[in-house]
Image 1 (cartoon, rainbow, N blue to C red):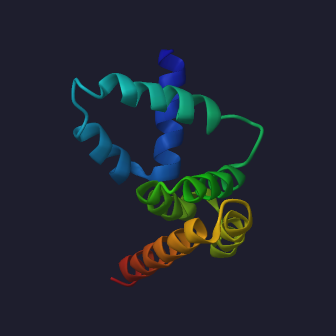
Image 2: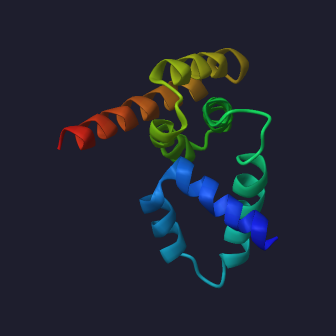
Amino acid sequence: MDQRFEQGMRTRRSVLGDAHVDRAEAGKTAFDAGFQRFITEGAWGTLWSGDGLTKRERSIVTIALLAALGHHEEVAMHVRATARTGASMEDVREALMHVAVYAGVPAANAAFRIAKATYAEMAAARES
């Protein structure tokens, strides 16, 4: 498991960025340490580190799923991650169009709003 954890941490950092992971690690407590290890090993060390899809493809799928399920904070986090996964704004737009058809217009509407705001924040940060 240590190898999977280490791979997960490398992948997590490559997708979400060092600053995000460092904040998450700094906020970890005894209460959620096991959960943090679980997601690092499972989500990042197994799923995101797998060979079946590219990081770009995983990013698109993840954003669509999070949007469909209404996990707005996670949508914003994964939109920010597109700067490192290679998923384009057009990829995200197409994924959210699929959400509208297959999961409902309200879910897509909320996700479009979040993605627009997140892209605006990203652009402002690049300009400063």
